[in-house]
Amino acid sequence: MKKYFDLSLYLVTDRSLSLGRSLEEIVAKAVDGGVTMVQLREKDTDTGEFVKLARRLMSVLKPLNIPLIINDRVDVAMAVNADGVHIGQSDMAYEDARRLIGKDKIIGLSVENFNDIEIANTLDVDYIGISPVFGTPTKTDTAEPFGLDGLRKAVALSIHPTVAIGGMNKDTAKEVMLTGCDGIAVVSAICSAENPTLAASELMTIVKSNVQRKWSKEIWEKSEGIYKAIIEQKFIKKLSDGTLELERFARYIAQDEIYLKNYYQQMFALAEMMDTPKNKELFVTFAKSGIEGEKLMHKFLISKYNICTTVPVSEVTSNYNSLINEGINSNNRCIALATMLPCMWIYNRVGLHILNTATLENNPYKEWILEYGNEEFTDGVNMVLDIIDKWAENIDSDTRDKMRQFYLKAALCEYAFWDYGYDGDNKSYDYMNSLKEWI
Image 1 (spheres, rainbow, N blue to C red):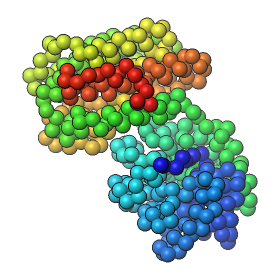
Image 2 (cartoon, rainbow, N blue to C red):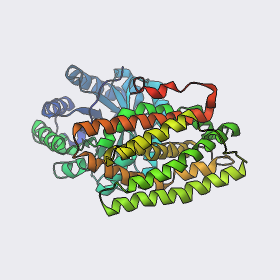
Image 3 (cartoon, rainbow, N blue to C red):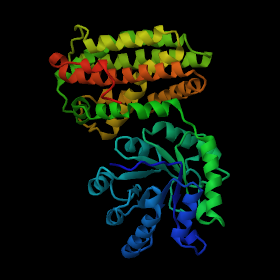
């Protein structure tokens, strides 16, 4: 079983900054001050010495139940039975690291730009390290810093837990945590501190005081099992590599035509429920651009493949539209938006996943793939997430519970929609009636 981990205050070791003190001393004092995770980073140490250091740290951390992560070296992590590894963009490929270290170990991945994050979203990594946020003297071989605005966008884009790396200290920790990341990774702020315990304690106080537990983050974690099941569906995999049978794609398009007729009306209705003219205009724009973009794309594909759209409404499509109508008719904008969110958010994440895994050359479904994985759609979804997170800060527990239930039911409808596209009426979709097995 994979060890529980908390990214709040993540110490990355550097013996050159430890003022002559042993790593064991630094780490023990830092954990006493609140460090929640430790990464052993030794770029210029031979394997034998690396293993010895790792074993000494394991003896300190294991009794305290604090995870030890080994930077880069999967062989060292395996030798000492560490809790996991952290790999960078130029290190061993994630798939190889996972195969070697096993599914029960933690794997973190450094990302240096937004494309790296989109690729990371297609992998089953346990967290990403967004690096660097600011320039730092401890690492001179890094990419262009994200800055606070870039970090905020990166956190919103990632489907995985996030830790900010690069320039983390008492002066920057507050603003960094306010971007919504799950924690900060520090080096010199603790390793070079005269009192590592006090330094860690002060940083942890800042982290805890400014952590942003956003509704969107909570609901994504709650529904992650559904999302992972979606991207493992045969429909998605075959759409990505261009081998999906036309009959199945046509069935999906025909049902989507039925669904979208209601969806655009529902989007206009949602726009009328917005709290500001700016937010209203955003959803009106969504509806209009959907009519213009999606409808044109559908029209092109229907003509290209001679798809018949005069078909009965499936049970899945009917149930999905009924659920959205129920959310809209609640007359509560929080519940209404939570119900419609999966059709935007999950669709976008699936689109990005396919875009980063697909074979586009000679793929008959290239137009569909490019429609839902584009940057404009992604930016729009992120704006919607900002809206619902702000609303969720001031709602009562009953509304929050209803938002969660409606969102999860809609997410399951998304799964069923792809499922129906692949199997049609040849199976039962009774699983739509219960969330128990999914969350």
